[in-house]
Every structure is written in C-alpha cells, then in structure tokens.
Image 1 (spheres, rainbow, N blue to C red):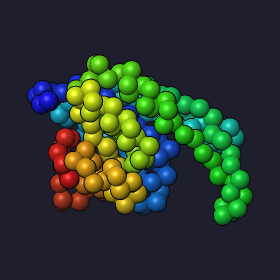
Image 2 (tube, helix red, strand yellow; image 1 turned 90 degrees about the vertical axis):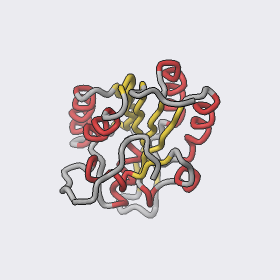
Image 3 (cartoon, one colour; image 1 turned 180 degrees about the horizontal axis):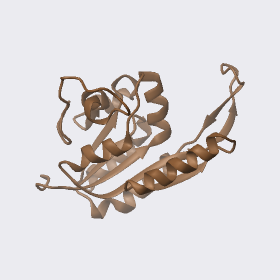
Length: 188
C-alpha cells in the first residue's frame, strides 16, 4: 500500500528509552524538533510521549515542568511513577526503571485506524510485535532510534531511521554541521 502525499502519522516517543540511549550516545534528542521533523512530510494526528515520574525532589518538580512543556508542544503524555530497583553496579546502589511497552502497543493499536504511518521513537526490540501488527493492517511504520543503541532486529529493516542521520535537525541544544539529514520516510 502506497502512502498518500501527506500521510496521517502517529508519533510515539519512549522517553525512558531515548533518554538512556541518548546519554550513552553523547547527545540528546529534542522532542519538539523531532515533532517538527516528522511533520514536514506528514500530518501528525496523534503524538504521544511516555515518561516515568520521579518521586523525589528536585527531579519530581523538573519532570512536572517537562510534562507541561510536552503537552504545550503537541504531545499527549502518559506517565507513571518510576520504580526503584536494587543495582549493585550503580554508585547509589539502585537504578530507576519505567517500562511502557504495553501502554505504547495498546495506544498505537487503538490509534491505528486514524493513521497511514506510525513512527516509534525507541530502539527497543519489544516493539517488533507491534510492527508486525501494524504491517498486518497494511499500515506503514518507521522506528527512530540512536544507531549504536538500538536492537539489531530494528536496524536491519527498511523501517529504521537513525537519529544520528538526522542529528542536525533533532539534536537538543546541538550545533549545526554541514552534513544534511534525511527526510521522514526515507531509508537509511
């Protein structure tokens, strides 16, 4: 099935995945810029971001401000409290965890009838089942993730867009380089 000239798109951002992977990569994605990048060739019908809520200050207040900011720039926010897990490798002895795989899958499937293409901003291979369900419905899908911090099963398909290839357009507080990025829907 071919995409219309200006496809109806859903943008689903797994914040905890991109935050962790961005830190490992050395640069962070600006979600407002990512929204704008996707909207260049698409009409965004649904934009959703999934984020963990810290329970303790000052992170709790910072997170509340971020939630409001994401709503202001066009995202619906799904949030839940972070879980604190014991981690002997961490300096503090614990790490925070928040998983939204089920919520993201369910909301994507609920939104799918409104869409021509789904953009999942996550490198998590748990979304391969979501991809298969989207393709069965004869819809299109693109994963957007950091190249070196993405499941190999996602990187090997035509549905993968490396954030690194569009870094100039989506980097948070980044500097511009002369190398142009790719357009939404192009294959890397």
